[in-house]
Image 1 (cartoon, helix red, strand yellow):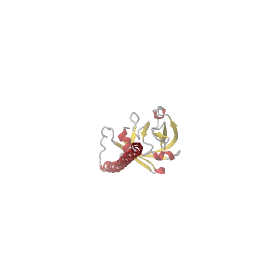
Image 2 (cartoon, rainbow, N blue to C red; image 1 turned 180 degrees about the horizontal axis):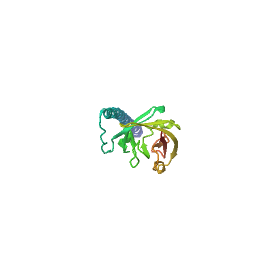
Image 3 (spheres, one colour; image 1 turned 45 degrees about the horizontal axis):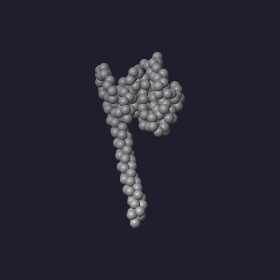
Image 4 (tube, rainbow, N blue to C red; image 1 turned 90 degrees about the vertical axis):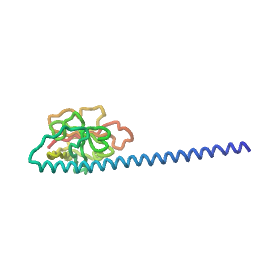
Length: 203
């Protein structure tokens, strides 16, 4: 009789353990989905806010009779708006490439010229959010960069895949260019082993 009780104890304990594990996994899944949802919503709201702020800046500059000098740029400041019409891509470009900045938009790579200026300007973005559409980029596609001062137009010159330590794509240039950088492959799970790079020259 004792043996039967002991034999019946193991399945009961196992069932309790499995039920507890299922509950933990379910709650964890709900929390993760909630976090992802919050992150995406936060980014969407920020993009809408940045667009409104940017449009107000353009309108204000049009109304001013004097052109005031731009204040010093700080990390997180909105520099402008990057658009690739054929892909339907439109995203605010912020100063810096911290994890928070790249969660809210795309980021200007420090140490490279500001977009619209002479030289090779680097812009980074996540492959699973704002730069996902770059997978369909083509040579000669138009890339636009709008600032409060005006609109700069670029044409895609080339696309290549490089290793993360290949910084030659951000080398200084005598011409005005944009270099867009994101992780690659686009659907890779975990930290991506390579970088997808798009170079566009100013028209």
